Length: 525
Image 1 (cartoon, rainbow, N blue to C red):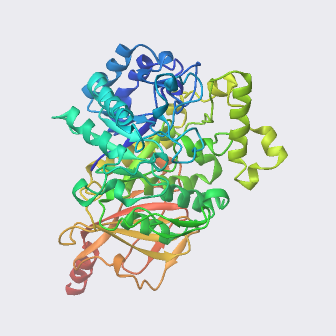
Image 2 (spheres, one colour; image 1 turned 180 degrees about the horizontal axis):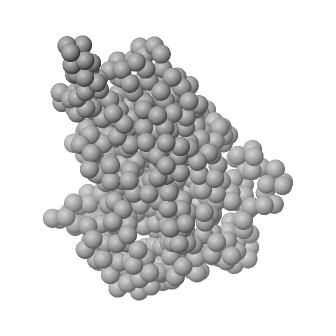
């Protein structure tokens, strides 16, 4: 996972055409700006002309609307020719409700041992006659690797994949996929709402041997910090400086503490896990759509704060993920849409979606509910298609992302992602610093983040800000550069004080302390 930058893509809305052929035409630009992994949202076939893909029913057939199987192969081949990996989002926690005829073949695909999850019946991975069911899903993993040369998977909602077998089914699918891919290495990522550390522990220590997990904690803290919204599943977050420091050092914020939103404890310890094992983001398909109108995060906060948070995301020690269009400040929304089912099923889906969003009090009122987009409306789907002309129209935001990805790729410290290689300190409300250590401290970096007002630190009783003898800090990069639409800010660090520009993230590097040498020369003369 080290060095990876992930780009989440929904093929149907990524381009105006909504096909693999059209998407393949954009891969060269993604590679140019520094993306290394394309994460494709689910493509297992389902009835209808559009949808997110999480209600697939034919797991061995690529979605017919996006093109032919050979078009998918050509997409992956084109990505590989550009040095891009392609991983597939797979759904092994339920079958979709429309076109699901699996029970015709056997009742043993499903189990009553566990309650239904919010999407459908639980799949039988550990009950009577579970062997053939496990083989079906393990074979499906091999299929995508063998037939289309995918470079791994993102396993959707593994907390709803119930299995008490000696080898957890997700681990078994991953193990078999690795064997099928040899000699290639593949990437295995899990979404796990319970934040169970065993997912990324090695198999010899009783883990599932996956490479990484999505880290919703970082996203939730970021949204609270940027918007002040603390409702629904944001309730347990403060958006505080310490949360970002802890995310940089430990990954998950909740590793067994009380979690009031779920009325229980959440998570298990992940101390010692590699920093790249935590995939962090400020946008993904779920989180953008859960704003109801599909509003992008940049429209919910100030431009300065958004630039500052983007700097933290792309220079942090974790593995960053961008959602399609985020890199150029897409104004197009991304909402929940689905074309499956008859009229009663569509109404049931609409009702269920609206009830789910009502978990946020601001979306529970009649006025808010009346404004929610109807998932089966084709115009809702069409409105989510990206407009690539915004790459030029929003050039300042595009330059911001391109420059950050280059700095992350080329800088000796920001690219390192060393275990225990970062420490941090709170500098005040909405202000903190991360220090990236080199072996001898001569090549350290600082990342100073201030989401609040202009601030001067005087005195400065924080050792993480101290340069080694004979060296001083110099600005390496600032989110307030005029190139990105910011106000060119003054020097952050001098021999006398520290000035933290408002709503900004600044990276600093070490240089020889020239001014001290000059003052000596003046005294001797």
